[in-house]
Amino acid sequence: MADVSRKIDAQPAAEEDAAPALLPRRPRRRTRRGWLLLPVLIAIGAAGWYGWNQYKGETTVASVVTETPVRGTIENSVTASGLLSPVKDVDVGAQVSGQLKSLKVEIGDTVRQGQLIAEMDSASIETQIEIAEAELANLEAQMLDKKAQVVLGAANLTRQQNLVASNGAAQSALDEAVANLATAEANVAALEAQIRKQEATLKDARISLGYTKIYAPMAGTIVETSAKEGQTLNANQSTPTIVTVADLSTMTVEAEVSEADVGKLRVGMDAYFTLLGQPGKHYEGKLRQIKPTPSTENNVVLYYALFDVPNPEGTLMMNMTAQVFFVQARAEDVLTVPVAAVHTGSDGKSSEVTVVTGSGAQETRVVETGVKSRVRVEIKSGLEENDRVVVGAGSGDGGTKNRSANRRGMGGMPPPMF
Image 1: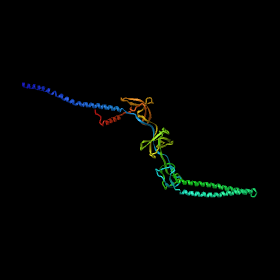
Image 2: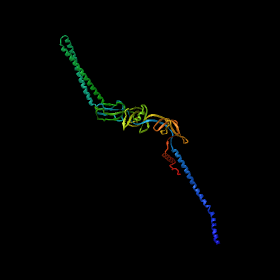
Image 3: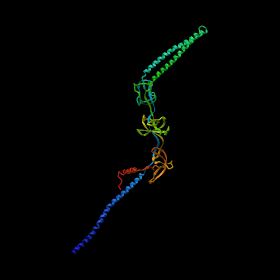
Image 4: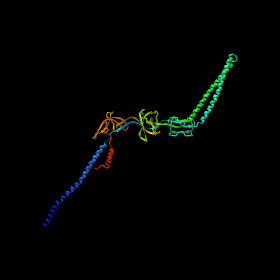
């Protein structure tokens, strides 16, 4: 029994002796685990702080959209579309009927005033002239006979007057002599009228002969030919056009202006246009005329406004499409801001803008505006070039776009996760 009790007593003692050996090991495991978790917690905290600052900064930027004033040229203008045409053009036609014998020019040729450009067949008219000349000669021969009859009648009348005075002839003989002289003189007058008529006929035939040679009525360029050599032209009903001569040294812009804008135009105001193939080049002129009669297309009333531009190099061609601007007001080298940045003040008269200061605060400033276009406004006073002007409020989409831009700016990296 004593041995058993010693064994029993010895077991707790062994456990007690083993306990102190095990206690130091468990604290060492907890300490190692804590050191391992500490860097992870620090990294998570840092990532959360960085992400929160980024999100907060982006929210502040996205809350408003700002823009600094831009210095440049601004204008208020009426826009329209138009076509180019020569300042002057003439349809040259045939004034006599017949066959076009020769055409001496082609499209694109430059001609001077009075230059021969076409010729009609003149054989028929030359025959008419010969007939008229022969008829006139016949009438002039008859005139000699008629005038001789007048001389004879006058002499007979004188003789009968003397005989009657001396009672050598009856009064009836004198009366007959008077009648014969009057008849002879009437015949002469009638023949003179016929001669004048025939002279006019001959003159007309000679004029027609001149019309068989067609000359350029002005200096210019042949822009169209409407007839060919050998073609028979009939000038009895209407004058057939052979060629069209145009003065291309100056071009006219014929702009179509809507009835809503035509009231803004004034004769003499500045105007310019651009071409589809030359968008950066301006051709300038002054409004010359507003045609009073409009045209109606698809129930839209359009008025035609015309102005001229020089074309010394010949770069402007007929029927080119022009984008036209009629300038109502213009200012150069001035500060401008978007129209959306300017709003009416509380008094209903002044103009105000909202500016973001260097500290991020917003303040309202009264400004003096000038020329206003459809998208920008001139600022005469109240702003500096470096001011940040509020042009609109940010949105959720806008904030997302800003954050996307920030990500692109950081090399496309995704935002930190926290």
